[in-house]
Image (tube, rainbow, N blue to C red; front, side, top):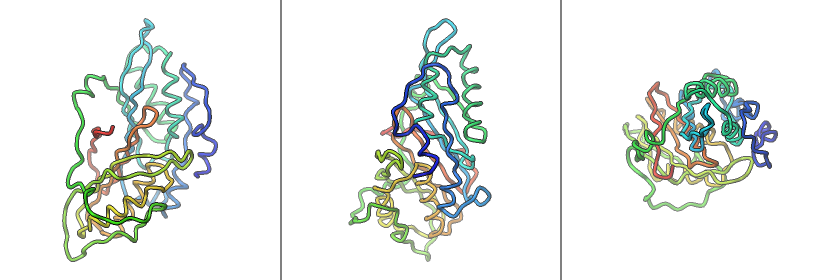
Length: 276
């Protein structure tokens, strides 16, 4: 378990506070998990963001009338801290009985508090149910590898040695799987996700990638670190000209977390999948 997570509200009984309380936010430094992967803030081999989507966002108008909406939060992948998910939920719940003059005022407040917790500017966008509903859901790009016939016996820890590639062939492709599962390192609850890999490099053996993804099934780690581990293992194997790895996780407590890591500076999408 991350040492800071032991002091967080995750996995503990918590009083739900319904009026604005920014002190509920609990930052967890990324440095310990980066160190596990052999990284520092100065040596990160990727760019990216963590998209958080809140489906239980509500506050009061000055008249006392409640509003519901969907919040989209963009946390830089190189921010010093992640925000522990239960503390994020508790903080958002503290808006429920809090009046704001308008949506812009709420967005400004959220950006200020979340940026302070993350240690870098956090993007905030509050969206209507109508606008989000009109976008619908999307499918991940490229080939789904989930129907490949594989034998699996490794579930406890990620197994990068399972990965294989053909160095004699250079390809550019997108592949994805919906079989990503890991466990919360604090509560041991399952985290379900879909993962996409887009790259140009040595041809990746798809069956070996699926075996590798399944090897995360009983692994305990935060969403962000799972994606970073996949990115690093593929980067070492493929030596790619470009590589993007991202996961879309199923929401828990009204929040979903979607880490994107890439060698490229690109405008990354935040589109919901069917399980989201």
